[in-house]
Length: 193
Image (tube, rainbow, N blue to C red):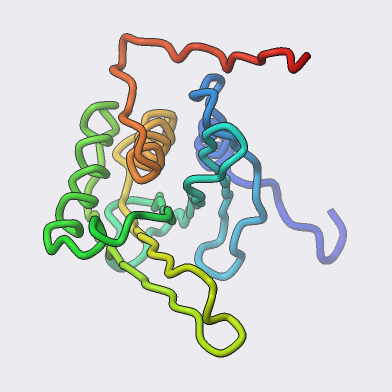
């Protein structure tokens, strides 16, 4: 090893990072590897996702895996997952005072449904309204929902956590999750003739 070379990441982190890549996701979801933040923990990995209906992007998100062999304050163990989800929503939905607790329950219920054990969960649900003024006065008013959450996974295999995050993104996009014993049908590609 030469000066400046980093030792290989611990096997525990490598196995957990590999489990972020689900072999099957709903056809409406596109997953991709993302650069991970470097200053939050000694080791990190990240994936991003978008939820589409036809060609319309309905929701986007990131899931970041942090690993510190010594743990950090507020974590319960060496791993921490940080999730972000953003979706456009109808104004009447975002004005509902129960939206925050409902969105939070989408996350916790999805984790439970996928038997993704976790602890020390925390996060925020934000609603944003954007209005145009001046030369943007004719732009439509848009409303968005954002969820930012983190939790400590109870196991090294994170596939259930990724599946739960994908379900959360689909719910935010207005698509109900599929029951665990039901497979998604592939997208139908109609010939345009």
